[in-house]
Image (cartoon, rainbow, N blue to C red):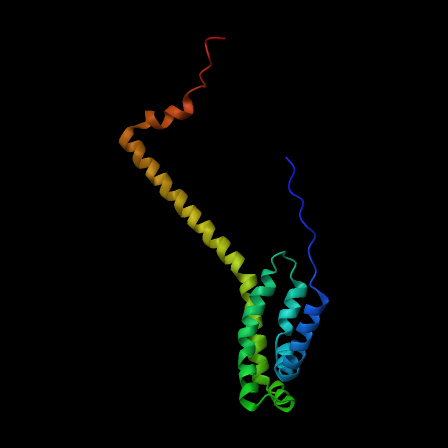
Length: 164
């Protein structure tokens, strides 16, 4: 059975790209101070993306989400001071805002490195507890039904067909 042939991916027409650029350039010009602050605050996310060797980019996502949360106070300060390059320079000069943004990214790195061992330990302990619970249940069943029932499945040889 042949699978249907997929059509080649269609590219976006040039006029749509030009129209997008026409609308995007004024927005980028207005938001330049915000983009400047965000690009500096989100550098740990870029580093995590480059260092992430997993296909689903889980490190970059973990660090990025917390880094964005840490960058929001800097963005709020910029917006409260006015959307100017001078205000962006003042915000980037505040060490506390750097600490918040980069500290949140550090917490993301910490979560990414610490959660797998924690989950592994939890699953190991819960599996051990479940095995112990099943052993105790098995012992109660043996007490109720007798040792013969427990040994019956283990001691019997496979029955061969006598018709051969």
